Length: 152
Image (cartoon, rainbow, N blue to C red):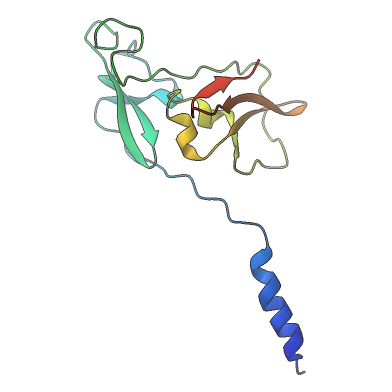
C-alpha cells in the first residue's frame, strides 16, 4: 500500500508539536562520607552527620558543618553561618499515596521542596503539592526571589 506524500509530510510536521518532554531530575548519587541529606530530614542531632548536604543540580553541596555537640558549626545563628541551609519544613499531615494524574513540571511533589529554602527552586519547580485522600493539595511555592514559601 502506498502512503500519499502529503499525509507523510503532515505527520512529520505534527509529530514535534506533542507534549514537551519534562527534564529528568538530576540525581546526586552517593552522598559524601559523614554527610546527611537535608532534604530527607538530616540534622546535626544525628551523631552520624558530620555535615549536612543539599542536592543541587546533580551535585552534593554542603549546607552546614556539624560540630561535636550536634549543632551546626558557625557563628551561633540558627542558620549555621553565611551560606548555610535553612531547611524547608512542611506539614505532611493527611498525606496519602497514589494521586493521579501525575504532576508535571513546573508542579512537583512536596519532597522536592524539602531542601534548602534558597535552593529548592533551582530544580525548575514552581509549585509543590502533597498527595492527600482528596487529591493533590498545594503546600508550597517559589516566590519571585527564587525562595520556597510554605502555602498558608
